[in-house]
Length: 45
Image (cartoon, rainbow, N blue to C red; front, side, top):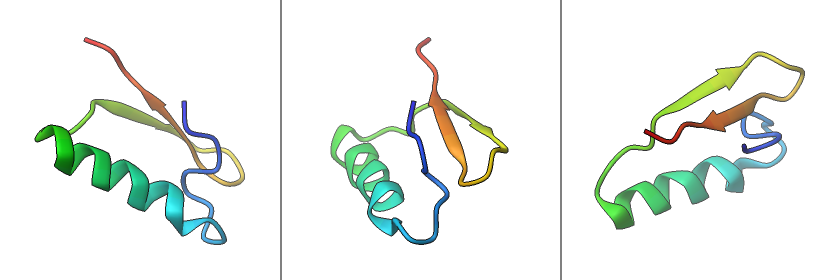
C-alpha cells in the first residue's frame, strides 16, 4: 500500500514506483483508493 501516492507535494512516490516497475520489467497490478491524497493498493496475483 502506498499512502499519499497521488499527493502532488510528494512526486517522488510515483516516480519510485515507475522506476521499480522499469527495473523489474513489468507493471504491478494496483488499485487506487480515492482518498484525500491518493492511496495506491498494490495487488499480489
